[in-house]
Amino acid sequence: MSASPIGAERAGSPSQGVARPRRFLAAGTPVRPRVGAGTRRHRAGPRMQRRLARLARATVDSPVAVTREEPGEIAAGLETVLEHARRGLERLTPEQAVAAWRGGALLVDIRTSEQRAERGALPGAICIDRTVLEWRLQPGGRHSIPELAGPDTQVIVVCRQGYSSSLAAASLRSIGLQRATDMIGGVEAWIEAGLPLSDDPPDVRR
Image (cartoon, rainbow, N blue to C red; front, side, top):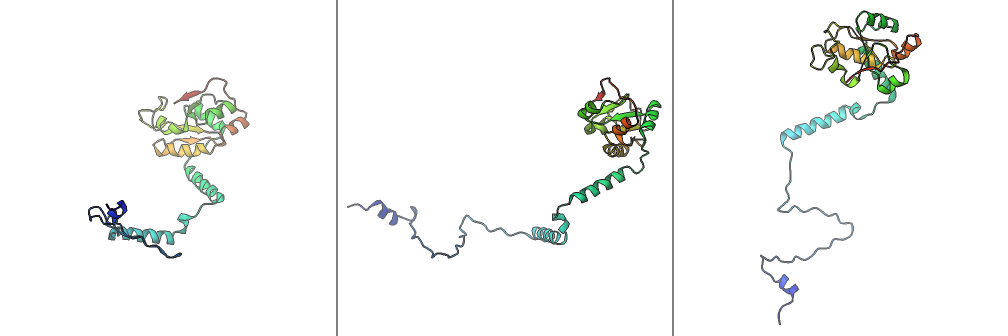
């Protein structure tokens, strides 16, 4: 009588594989992972060990790196950035901005289209989106507007309330427009001063 398939498997040659008896562990016994022929143990080299050591020291010695800033701290940081941006700016009142524009300065409105539609357009202003401001007003740049005669051109940046305009003016100064400045109070101050607004379509440069 021929042997059963199970018996043949147990009595098979080494090439066919020999069934190994199963071992059962008692409940609660920890199981250690086996390291077989296809498993490699990786050990960090000296260079990686030094990196890990520096990272561990930085994590322990620098708790600020893993803490979150409170809203008050963020506001204080913004005030510091704004104060630094306004250093060296000869900021203008709305009346002074009008006089400078009549004398040849460029009045640049960086408000959004929604803000212009809500409050009105400034007469004589060139509207440039904040995202492309530096490219349109780069002295000698390929994408600059033709009204920019050179680095000595006075540029007056206007926003809604006079905060973003200060940061934008400081950025323009950093690329060579040393006479770039902004208007105190923005368009809100313009309206409060009783200066006129324009009903004409805004001069938008893209």
